[in-house]
Length: 374
Image (tube, rainbow, N blue to C red):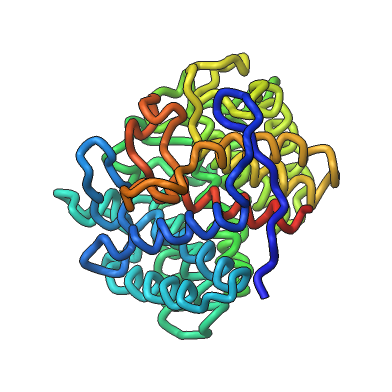
């Protein structure tokens, strides 16, 4: 039997409105991800739907990788086994396209070049870890080992990754690679391989050298390090938190909580976070990055589970309510129906007029985690 989610909502303008039922909202987001997979010629998930051009992008190996655990989770929650089957097909496809050196390509399948990149490889680890846990198939173990060994071979002595950055970003070194460390830590745990756990800790140790006294992270954006996206801030802080929890390093957990508290202090009265933040934790954009909202929701809820039970739920609920209010459940365009836009308003500065698959993924994760916290 499907468990019912109990959530309320407000719209993006702060006026209370009758929200779409949370269960229906979650189902719509899952349906959007299913259509995003069906929109491609392979078993990957389309990177985004472009509402201005009315077309789907090519499959995106990076985000398909971390969508896999989301669909396995939703299959259990909803009782719809087809989503688990989709997740397994995605994981097998990721094995098929893994590059010879063990890495995962940058960009989408329709990119002009195919080169391995650190961040994308780290994100696919999540999918292979979960597929291995669900199926026990050797191919996922083999892909994990190849990918993790490649990541270790590219890691510098101080724990940072400076080689094999994405050709689609502006910086060669970044702190949001703690999200890669999180994937390595998960792989180390399921494979019982201390080298991977140690490498994950080394990266977080390096990242902490980039944290200012007020919690702000240096070198933490795809393009503008002076005003990073809440999307990349959330990547970084969750990586620090989860590696701390997996390795038992309380220093990491405490630092993640400190940063998360600073982000919470920027939350607007309508529940949204500014799309970008400056070094003094002031808004760097008037629009909101919906992916960042959902991701910080998850961070706060994970802190609620691990550190302080009720302190963080208020922030999580408000951010999730704002994001849910932007979702369209009554629209004929199947590329928008149930999806989550890049920005609110949709014309904002992140993924302008596009509906990225990672926004739907993190939104689903946040909804399902909120349901457990109720």
